[in-house]
Structure formats: structure tokens, C-alpha cells
Length: 382
Image (cartoon, rainbow, N blue to C red):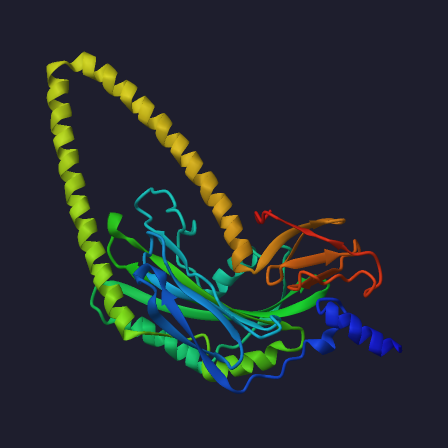
């Protein structure tokens, strides 16, 4: 068996190893298909349609934003049959800021206190990537993508709410290491910021950042970008039936929130009146009881805040692993971050990994060296 034949046979079992790049050169997809996204919170009805390369696999759903921007957005992942070329729309990143009000960061929202340009947000985003990234440089934004963002801002500013809406877009070419080979990625984001011209406690606003990611083996990214940008493939089109149901739910929930606020205000007013009468009758006794109650509430609030902070920190680190398609495995060389697209991971202690979805695959005797199957451990982002 000659060297090239042996190498091809080995690469058939280990497409992740260096030197096997000739197996990961998918042709630029020409034909197009469609992926559909259902909304589980509305009975699983069809919510969005996404155009994708024909023959690609597709996964998607609808997620609701946190309290700083409780709007539903689609997320999806479309990838080639070999899993090496991918297009992904991540969950929206949200934050709000009110300079005249001292307030804690809402769970699920970023701790940012000002508007950011798209380029500034990407600087923050790449800091979240485990193991670091090599930033090659900026990339251009396709005209169709620009037009879509500008149309969104124009519609928001036309509603006459007194809130000024702006959008900005940017993209970066970066390189990451997956096992022992290099992956090229385009990180693209459009940032929408809403600000009010009011002063005092009503000043401030909020922003949302929408990131899509293209991934391909080194040397294959430009072909993927050309197809995606030519057809604006990250665009999601909502279904009219879903939009009607969604708007009805938003209106119903808004009415419920207003009713809850009124009930809460009434209860608080009644409580204040009762407390005032009690203080007037027995000032000293109620003062001591009030101070004891305040101390207990303070301690309870501090405990709850610490518990909530710990929970958010753990959830955020796990989400980073999910968003970046990572998992943590342990082998002879210790813990490592690898792609979560595969269920089986082997390592040889020489900073090389072999990944596959075949539970019966075993690189020992096929690839040089001694290979040990790694154990998937909890991915906490550390």
C-alpha cells in the first residue's frame, strides 16, 4: 500500500486530523432549499422560513428575549452533510441602560451601559470564544444585508413612539483551531439601538445585537460567503399566521402586565396606609419591629442576589459553549474544548483529536500512535 493510499484510508476515519484537507473541500452549493422554524411557545406552528443550500441539514426554533427586550427571535443552524461547513444564526444579545436610575442588570441581559457600534460589539464578542481566535481582518457587508437593516430601522422610526432607532453592521474574518486543523469563520452582526430624547429617569434606551456565523475549513470560506451573500441566506421570513398569533399574545401579555402593576400599586398603597396608622399609634414599638423587618428583608435580598448572580454566571458560561458549538472532553492530556458536532472523541496525547459520530469507530491500528477515547464532561466555559 503506497503512502497516498494509506493516508486516504486513514483520513476516511479521521477527517479532523491535519493533512486530510483534501477530504473537506465541498463544492460551492448552487441549488437552494428551505428550512422551516416552528415556535414551541405557540403550539409549534410554523413561524419562519429560511433559504439554505440544497441538501444541507437544518435545525431551528424561536426563543423569547429577556425582560430588557422581550421580543421573540428565530435561531437556526444549517450545515453540510459532512458537518464541516455551517451557517448559524445565534440568539439575540440584549442590554438596556438608564443613566439616571441605579438598577441591577436584568437576568439574561448584558451588563452594558451605553450604545455600541457593530464593530465595538464584535470586539466584546470575540473575547467570549474559548481558546481565543485569530482575527484576520474586517469583511465587507453585502448590499442586500444593508438594505434589510435600514428597512428595519425606517419601520421602527415611522411608528411615532418618540424613540429613535439606529442600526449598524460589521463583519470579521477569524480563524479558530478545531482539534488539529484550522477553521475559517465570518462573524457578522447588526446592532439595533433604541434611545429616547427625554431627560431624567426616562432617559436611556436599549440595544440588541444579532450575530450570524459562517464556518468552513480553511480556504473554503470565501466560496461559502459568495453563495450566502448572493442570496441573503441568513434572512428569515415570518409566517403571517404566526405573526398574527404572536401579536395577539404580545397585546394580551401587555394588558396583563398593566393589570398586575395596578394591583401591585394598590396593595402597596394599602400597606403604606396601614403602616402609617400603626406607626402613629405606637411609634416606638413599631419602629423596632420595622427595623427588625428591614434587617431580615435586607439579608434575604442579599442572599437572593448572590444566588441569582451565581446562577447567571453558570448559565452564561454554559451558553457560550452552546453558541460556539463546543463541548469539554477529558483524555490523557487533560481537559480540552472540541466541536460538539460529534458524539465520539479520541485523542493520542499529542494534541491531536479524532472525532466521529460512529460509536463503533476505533482509530487504533488505523492511525499511528495510541488513541484513547475521551470522556465528555460538563462544559462550564472555564
